Image 1: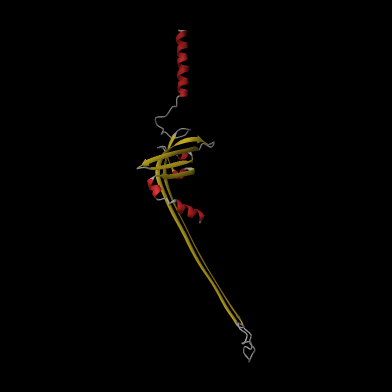
Image 2: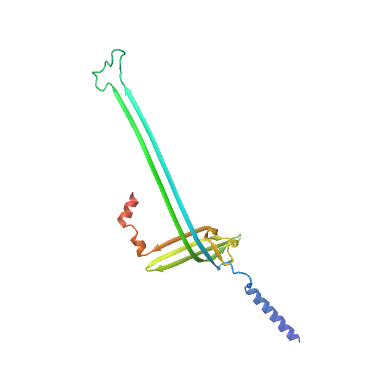
Length: 191
């Protein structure tokens, strides 16, 4: 009888140790990223538009007249060349400049939780590489997100990611064809 109690106690302790080691998931809770190594889907919807316009106009006119006259007698020094001096100087400047830029990036990518900040925010990072017809395209993403911003379906909008850095690059025949030649790039670098 004593051996049955000892065996039951050992089994109970073993089951408890296994239960502590196992990560218990609720059947009613949605799986959300909350620790290092978890996956999180970021919905990238970035739109950026910037424009700037400046206009400058200046105008300056100067008039100078020098002559010597005696009342009733007129200019008695007419025999001296260049004695009477008339000068008019005008300066006009008009400058206009305008810049406009628009960018849009829409994508969906899954990243990995790389760390957890002391306040509980998740540090996320990930790379998505796609190769289509000899063109390599890659999206690099990193930032941090509060677990409260993670939706029930384990997604987060890019607008909710703090310190967000997104780099979208491409390399291949299309990008090489649109790149200026070496001479043009050298001249642009000089001037």
